[in-house]
Length: 141
Image 1 (cartoon, rainbow, N blue to C red):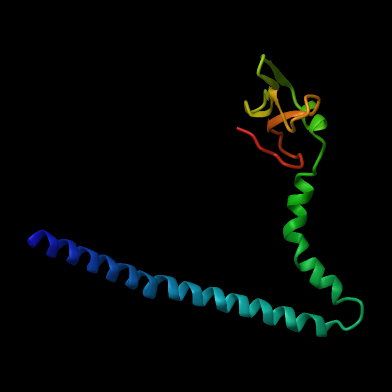
Image 2: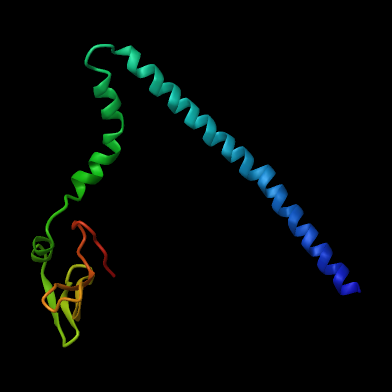
């Protein structure tokens, strides 16, 4: 009976800790996020009336893309073959795998399964496991 009492007491105290964590830590953090979102929405509301001519569209669009533009400018999307040809590589050619390893950084980013195809058709392209960075869907190890 004593073990059951201790177990029940442990469960109750754990519940109290979780509720206290939610109340004292998560609630203030959520309030700060709400306040920040409210400030952003108020700024967005005040900017369009400020420049009633052709400028409201420019600040609204220029406010968001600067965060996205550097990432897009730093990593333009190129074709798989161009990305593979852009760096020196060690070729991999086995009965089950083909591809290459980039010499800079030792990154395995070009690997395909030879015996498995994307569709049931035997002439369909092989399944691509890894793709180099700066491609449409990069994945590497």
